[in-house]
Image: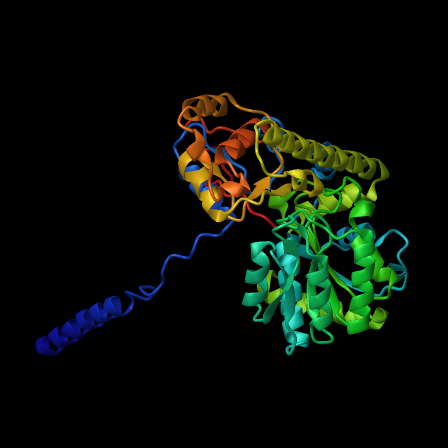
Length: 474
């Protein structure tokens, strides 16, 4: 009996040991993920202990002191929704009121497709969520299709369609030599793509270049899309933020609608309402008729169910409150115009400083581009040198955030310390290009001064978000 008990105990111990051994090493093959090309900039910035560091890489609007901006219309909307019983789950499709107001903003108050109830739409997790929902929808119902994406584009576009397992192709868009739109090559790619191809188009303020087609060019594109029966998917993350006019910034979408296209559109309210952390967006798909719209919406909701079930309520309440109230909506339009005009002024200041400081390059593209980013034309090597030697952080494609202008004392001190170490060898690249990193550094510091950490955990003077200080992008 005792021997049997001993055997049982021994077996029990062996079983425990075996279980302990079997549960170890499950994730030993997992390697660290590569740094995100955008969010990794902020991580590197936060790790830098230099007092004069500057972050002009990640897309978030700031005031002259590097502080986050909460719009007055948002503050007023917060007061109105405070105390209301809004903690219940939203439907899978989100807030019907928010979706309704979003559609009117994108398609127009009196759009025929809205009157005819031909638009299937759901609330989404900002622009990223809207794009991902559509990518999954495309894969499920057009499994043979692929998506054409511009070169360059927002880096996360590639991740979204890759993870949805939709094959990707690219089309020409930006011309580095002119720092403008390569419209001829763009049109050639549209013409040469197989009939019925899906194209991802930036509705306004192309990210990262800030280069948009003209109204006439949009009309030519719309015509060619009709000829080829292509499907246009618009990513509209900056409506109102590009020109200061929400109607003007929706012009590309309106042109395609007027020409009878069935389109899809991803909307985000992160930038134009400053609701970055609320994750408020909308995905809409124009259909043949009302019954088809009902079917498409039901499928979009079905896709959302295992992803996140239903979207968050608070940000949706803010958006619907602002857009449905005439006074708040008018105030929002004014505030968007102020932000857009300030960014335009930032562009003028940056160009002026670059020219005043003696750069041999033409910097007219700085003021010709629109939106919150300046596609500077700097090479990855030049960006690396700005970061390693001058602690200026931006994405390696040379994209600069045009939303800060007040120089902090730490930045001025840093410029004074480092300026004497630069002379003629500060030039990078072929002499014929005349690109002086010293000129770029000085211009960035005098035109785009960001908040200085002063040894504490801050981003542009703001407290860390979620403890990691990483500000996302839609």
